[in-house]
Amino acid sequence: MIVALAGGVGAARFLEGLIHVIDPKDLTVIVNTADDLYLYGLYISPDLDTIMYNLAGIANKSTGWGIQDDTFHCLEMLERYGNEPWFKLGDKDFATHILRTHLLRRGIPLSEVTRLLCSLLGVEVNVVPMTNNKVSTRVVTEQGILDFQDYFVRQQETAVVRDVYFEGIENAVPPEGLLELLKSANGVIICPSNPIVSIQPILKVSGILPILKELPVIGISPIVGGSPIKGPADKLMRAFKIEVSAYGVARYYATFLNTLIIDTVDANLQSQIEELEIHAVVTNTLMRTLEDKIALAKITLRELDKIL
Image (cartoon, rainbow, N blue to C red; front, side, top):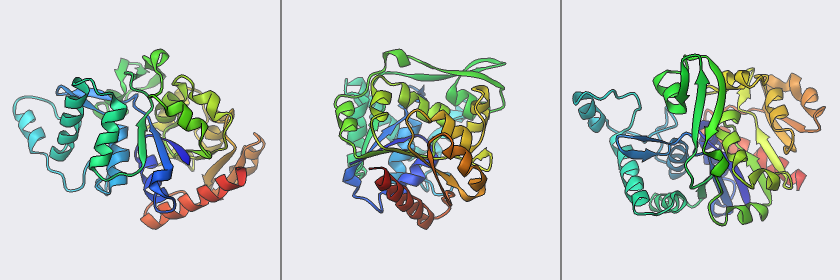
């Protein structure tokens, strides 16, 4: 059984390839929930939904998030009522949030709600939120403290970042049974996700990091040629004084990482990464097609087998 830590579009695209080379039932994905938010009275889990929609084969192919061929009539009507539609939610997407919120209000934990939603969409992968407790990413900027989605979506990453912290993380515990499942894993994959706001919250959930240090762990760098493929990882890494490079990612994960897969454009960093006692594998990590995703997944599994 393989466990993957994930958040965002990069992770979703990689996992789409991974389920073509292993039995989906042998894969558990622990997903970041620190960027969840309430909007229009609904509980929205952007990373969970992005992972779920991609694994179900219904994600918007051009954006990687949202649902393919969705319409936006509900959002248009909300705008007519005077609401600012800064967070783009399609009509089908709204249905997910309506049902999730309804179930949460009945006292069903997020992990069970996620299991149900995935089952109804035909997703065989075990998709698990990192915690059932509420954790919120706060971005400290020159303009004040912003919710992550406010910074990322509404502000379009324009505010200068000074720090990031996770409100509520000190009380976050994994869903029941997750630590036992993680201990039994054959290996762990750190998906090509934002190290600061996608992976770090998962690592901070009580009990997860100590177990990772005892397992074979392989990561895929989300930084290619000194820039993220998507999202604000570069701005956030600089705020933490982390070099925006595949080497910076390797140093950030150095306490538990065995192998890091880096893109061919970063081949010059291979020896530098290996000085950290982390094996570096050079290959194409840009996932433009399904074939690219499958090829990267095969290489990842091959290199993980070498650690076992």
